[in-house]
Image (cartoon, rainbow, N blue to C red; front, side):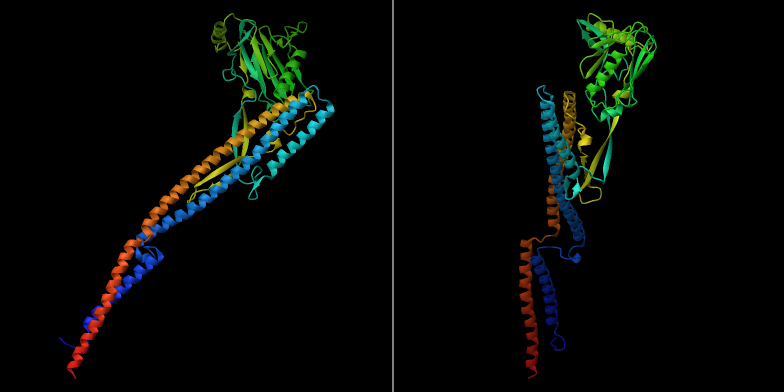
Length: 468
C-alpha cells in the first residue's frame, strides 16, 4: 500500500540504525578503555569476581612492600649485632692481653678503660638502634615472653638420681657423678640463691652431704653436723661470685677448710685436688670447671664398675647407695623477652608474621661487670664474652632465619599476584582483535543502515510525484 502518513520502511531502518549505533558506542568504549567490562551491566557476575580479585591483588602488593620493610628491619638488626659481635671479639682480645703476666697494673687499668667504653657502646646500640623511629632492641610495645629450660650446673647423673658414671684413676674404675659448672655466669649465679644439691654415701648407710647456696655478704658460709653418720649441711655464701670456676673453688675451699670426718678428732685431710668426705666418698676438683663425686672403692675393669652401679646404685631398695640429688641446680627456667614486630604480608585479617628480635644490652649479655684489672678478672671476662657471643650468635641466627622466611614470603606473594592478575585480566580485559572485528562489523552495518534510511525516505518522494 502506498501511503505518506507513515513511512514504515524508514522507521524500521532508523530502529536498526539506532541499535547499530548503540553497539558501535559499546565497542568504541571497550576498545578505547581496553576493558571488556566497564560497568556492571556489561557482565554483572564477571564484575563481581574481577573486583574481588582486584582487592586481593592490591592488598598483596601492599603486603609485599610491608614484607620488604621487614627485611630492611632484619638487616638493620643484623648489622647492629655484627658490630656488637666485633666488640665482643675485641674485649676477648683485650682480656687475653691483660691476663698476661707481663702486664703491669697501670697497663691493665688502661685496657679496662677501653673495655668499659666498649661496654657502654654495646648498651648504646641496644638502646638507640632504630628502624623508622622504632627502637629495635628496646621496644616498649608488643613482646613475647618465652620460658627456656636451662641447666645451671650440668650432670649426666642428675636425671637418674644416682652415681651413673665411671671415673678412671690410676688404672682403676670408680662409680662417680660429675658436676659441670662451666655454664655459670654473673647473671645465672644469682639463680642459685637458696638452691641445694646433695649426695649420699656410696655404701648402704645414711650419711649424706647437702650444699645450699646463700646470698650473704661473701663471708657467711657455714657448716653443721660435720662429724658422724648424719646429714652434713654446708651453706656456701656465693655473693659477688660471677663465674663457675669461682663457685666451684668456693665450695672446694670451704670443704677443705671445714672437712667432715668420723669424729672431731679425726677430720679428713685434703689430698691435693681431692678430699675424702665420708668413709666411702671423695670430692675431687677435676679442674676449675668440674667436680667429681667418686666412690672410694675402685674396680679393675669398667664393666665391673658399671655392674656395681646397676646392681646396687640403681636398686630402689638401696636408696642411700650412691644417691645424688642435683634437681634444683641443674633444672632452671629463664624468661627470654622478645620484641614483636607484626609484618602484615597478606590481604586478609590474620595474614601476618611476628618478626621476633630479642632485647639486647650489656646487662642482658652479662658483660656489664667485666673487670680485667686482675688476672682472675681476665679469666672471668673470657667466660662472660664467650657466653655473650653465644647469645649474639643465637640472636643473629634467629634474625637470619626470619630474613630468609620473609624473602620466601615475597617470592610467593609475587607469584600469587602475577597469577591472580592473569586471571583477572582474562575476565575483565578486552580482546582487542575480537573487538576490532566487532567494531568493523558495526561500522559496516551503520553505513548500510544510513543508506537504507536514505532510500526509505526517497520512496515517499515517488508518491509525491503522482500528485503533481
